Length: 622
Image (cartoon, rainbow, N blue to C red; front, top):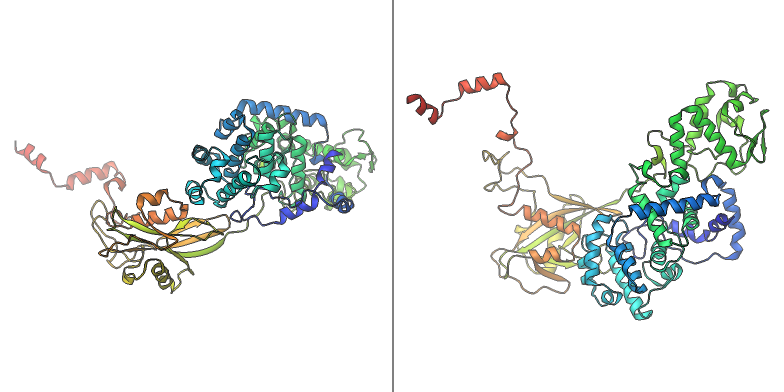
């Protein structure tokens, strides 16, 4: 009964959180799967009855829940024992385990959880180490500038995370006396950018609060363990997963249990190639059991699915062709059910594959809404099919095994945009060549970062060059317009550009290289940069830039707060400079290393027609 109460605890707010758009660049949004914030901590009492009716109509089968307390106990013990043996040695775990001060411990966990959102562990390790070395406490981070934060965060992606983290640190220092909130509820309410997942992780790992967490790894583990084939983004499934996590979390070691569940999903229960033989909870995994029955043959599958069907629905096969509600006396077989069916069609042996396919189409056998000839064997429930199973349009794929769970949600393709950007360089500047960077607005995509001057453009737009030139002049004053060139559009032959073997330059002199573009995909935008270049050669170097702009050396550029996309643009520009431009990937004149090794007969002919070299003539003369 406790699991049902947990499901119905905050249903309306869960619906609202799941309906929010998950654009990672928007402020205050969690980046992990199913970790959207709840707006209110509780649901009005007047809605409880209606919400209970909705959940009952959804036909939640107990098959998808943990009904037996013994199963919960075994799940906890096996998972924690495995975690103690197999957990990875990560810097944030070492810091949290060795930190006595609760506020410092919570801060260390907070930084790691924010960095790990939508980012691989291997990438985060170096960033986390440098961050904690520079700002080891909340007070250190609160006193830092946004420019410093963006500079260290550069390349990690989802840049609003770093800004929100600093905003939260300042709020803790200035408004909360330097002390972190101690519960998941207050963490979520008081700190900007902290959603349900991050709040639960901090509260459980740093403060020992027995609260479960759900991220993408936990979603995958729970969906496979309980064979949940419905869309995990739906409000019903999302709330169920949070309830299961809360039910399973170990009250004695909540932080370790949450980390163990995520570790299991990251290292064993992986999306594509799970290592089920090494899973500590495989004995409780419905997905793995289904795969095992499939290997035993059709009869084992049908009998096993029928056993689960009658157990979950409390249907009892009377043996005389009818069903009755009540405790199951014995596990029936498909043959006994089919032979006693009043339908002549159901008794045909050809029905067996149909029954098997019907059950597989539901991914689990807890649904009673069977169709076709199989429908004559079972009474269809009034509420319809189970909403936690996969829909009939997505049948079980035997080749995928346990990776049939969780259901793969179709992703909306990113919005495509085009931008024209220019690397404006002063080759003769004091202290070495310098490039112009301008700062982006303080809100929106890549807020506060530095970039090369750019304008929004249509693909192959005719006025792209003119608009970019006006943008450049607004920052740097009058410029020599003829020198603004679209990199790669017109090829000027230079020494070393042709084939390294013979110097051949393919095509006529006026033939263009392919147009150079930089394509960078953000979470919701696919941005194509048309790259231009303009070198201010023979002009008096400019030393002062207007507000919002900077002239940086190449070394300063690589350490500045610039996005990965701008680093790609700069690499394209550097590759186009004299002496660095690479030739085409293929050359019509082959080199010795690229030639095929001739056959023995061909080698003999080649040696016959090859003119003798000087050494051979000399040896003959002697």
